[in-house]
Image (cartoon, rainbow, N blue to C red; front, side, top):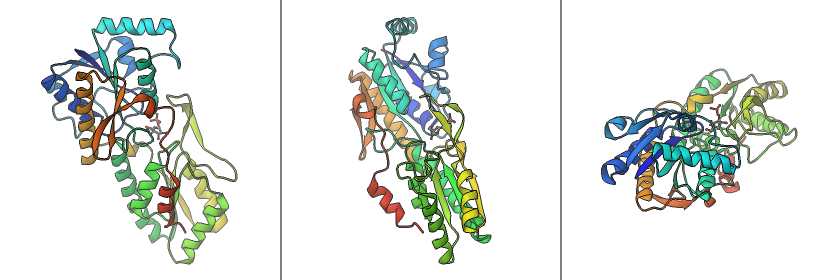
Length: 344
Ligand code: F6P
């Protein structure tokens, strides 16, 4: 069996470890041939790939990014035409591949499902720092992003308190506030603002004032997709993501001056940005990613295509694509209630 490995969407710490796990099990144990397409579907379209074997993956687990490269290039239009599927199958035949291991988040696993529905053999490896993919408890990359964000909170707190300032930290999370929630809880932020639970700007300012009344300086964590309940305001940057949606980023820079002008408290904004996606994965992410890769190789051997290798409790289980895509895993009310204990 010859398998094509491909990464798509934004990178996520742990992708290298996932590929290594899949190759060690797939090539060395199951006897597969494996190739890795460079820069995701771009490499597939243009015939750029490398052989994946033990030497190719030696020592890569601690490395950030992904050595194969990734891109947001799609394999076909939103719904593939018969002509596109014919060309797709021709490419597979040209490369001699029987199936795919697709490493990606929501957009990628939606593609995995479409391909599966067209009879293409695919096993999915879920990844996203946002942790918003259904069918898995955690995605690799999330723990690393939370570690970086909570370290940023710790650092912002000391400088903020020294100057009696309100510090606003923006973290990633377009549709789901998991990074903000976990980092906010770990760092003891006085306010954690997430897309799932819009709040009014008056309420935000009241919380900041009540923190000041208790003699403390506020640390506000905000996910990039947060909107004010009174204005519905989001902040978009130039360009679109893999799903054609506007890129977000900059909500902290909108909130900070409003807090400052309404409360009179000097306020500073920090946008953490891609720092939280880069660098070496945590041990947790390396282990999760490696186990995901191993499970994907086992699924291919067993012919259990059409599934994603998701984490359920402490086990990696095969989850049908239909259970994973078409909806987002968002922060439920009871989790928001936990972090709200710290508000104000
Ligand atoms: O990987 C998902 C994500 O981190 C989102 O939270 C964020 O909106 C987006 O990627 C940023 O994408 P890009 O790297 O393309 O700017």
